[in-house]
Image 1 (spheres, rainbow, N blue to C red):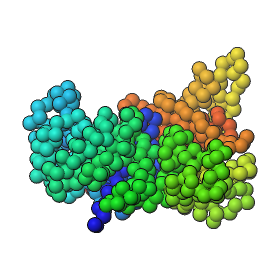
Image 2: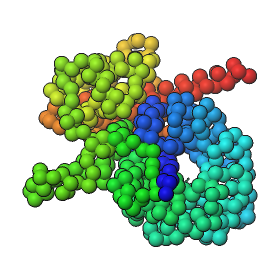
Image 3: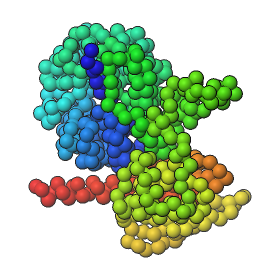
Image 4: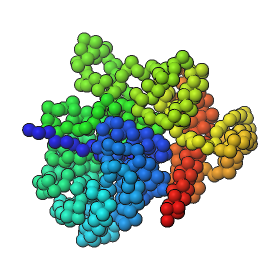
Length: 520
Ligand code: KIV
Ligand code: ZN
């Protein structure tokens, strides 16, 4: 029997980004998209073009660099959403528009306030419009898990007729059990036949997203939507690494299907996303958690020494976790070794970025004896927010706040090379630092999220601070990373990083506007 392909549709950059605190800047999204392509993902949902200017820009840039995977933008069944999606992905060699509307009685009545007939009409108009821009159109019946099968069939007939090639059946609220998903998918599969590919998109509210995705594959689904580390709205989406490894390890059961995923790129992808978002997978998370290959009990350790297969169902190397690589570089490591390490970790940097990261690596190596893979990842991501013409922290001095008013003196180099020093007070030390930075840069940031995490091990471990800051009314919160052995210094760097991301985005938007004016 010929094996059939399971299309891996990754939505880390769209649904994954909807995880609270997971927003990423354009440079970070490009690194992730490049790693997803290396991983062998078939479709990269790069974002929701109409959601914000930043989303549009990121999708557009991803469309310019990704060559092998299909680049997709989400769009509600609205004219503006679809035209924005089409514009954003226009340059991609392989492109898809993914449009959706809710089909469950509760969503149609309360959210959309539309009749089923109106919903079908909107869906058909949306698919037909999308089809006028791209050949590859996916239609999602939002909340399919709570929709009536007869209605799913009716709307599928209509959108397939209008040109949809993939029908996605999301369990949007994560309520279904594997048997129920299997039942829905097999009925739809029998009904639709080869007129369209059936896809699933399972949320993890009951911890069943992966089990549901596997049940769907057994019942005829040939596309699964998933995210790295299971990121996503609320409890997240089905984890890509779990689905792929289940199909691989249990090939005896899934003997009729295959994926294009290069499993050796799973671990680098997982670490890259955890570092960029600041959201670590739980230690006991399947496949990529810190403890996934840790054997604690004596009996297990004894078994492992005799034969690894006694307690390991696949080797760490199969997902690209090579233990001998985790202790990496030191003060005497050269540029070639450093470049080789970056490649292994999945990062692709321009010459300028490489020079700047290498310089920071050397500074770090002077202060820290052993540098681990996670240190390098943090170093790169903390550098990723900077642009050629950006603000740079030169010095930070904190006044003792014990019993007094917390205050900070900050020196910043401005994009035109001037050094400005100012001092300010705040409700706490961090507040004083951020307010002083605002005064110097004449910006007004609103701190939405602040996280501090120690990277790798040892007394000289680095503090990696991740902030989310919104600059300006109705502007999306942007992420900044700061790295230092000193948490306050790392916080100041992170804040300036978010500000630089904001200015980069503004610059890109200005350029796009000027380009569009000059081509009129
Ligand atoms: O969960 C969901 O229903 C979605 C759709 C937009 C596909 O994310
Ligand atoms: Zn979703």
